[in-house]
Length: 280
Image (tube, rainbow, N blue to C red; front, side, top):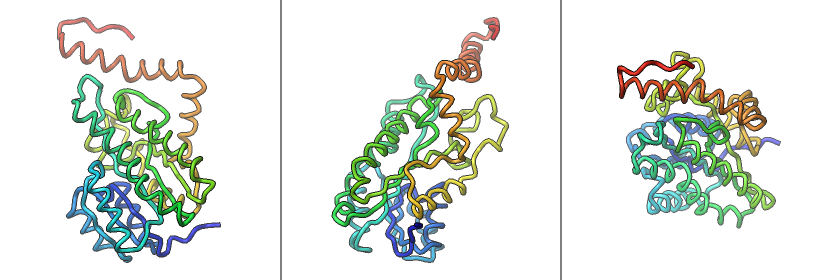
């Protein structure tokens, strides 16, 4: 049976753009009361003004304990409870390991994994006391398939998938739903910031390969109305995941051919312009 979202209190991180902003609009249209958290206060306030339901704006950084605690405390003081936590905030600096800074490495781990764990830890006791609640994690296709230049981004999403699976089996029997959503690369600010050629170097001109973020937002809302453990967007990425699991050596060979070797050959030519091009 579908669950009504009317009057449910949803704490949504990363709400200022992308999946988060689109999900906020859809949740408000279904009557949910929202607590929007992100670093960009102006964007949050502009979004809140467009929404038809009571909305609390909490500017903050999910990696900071004081900001996480403030968001949870304000949500409870304003609405009395938190019914749903959507861990949507994410950060990705997609590049080869040699090009990443220590600060970028730490930021990815902190935003994509640690913050979600700590926020969940903050809201879970209340959900357990009431015997109901829902925790959602925005993971990624990279939760299953790791390739350059996702060398740090993918491990954070692998960790998020493992946490979601373990948590679901820990609290599911007690009435708490846990959902992980696995979207393919989408046309968001994240993609624009990193550059399409970083996502798919051999298909850099194929804009149609990038998912419409509205589809992810729709699936997120649907997973709250009809809880599911795993949501793949689009559905056919399951075949990529199955292929990786069935034949990792074939996946290695394809990625080496299409991604890794072209990159290192370009690097060699850049560093040594007179070097002959190797055959592939």
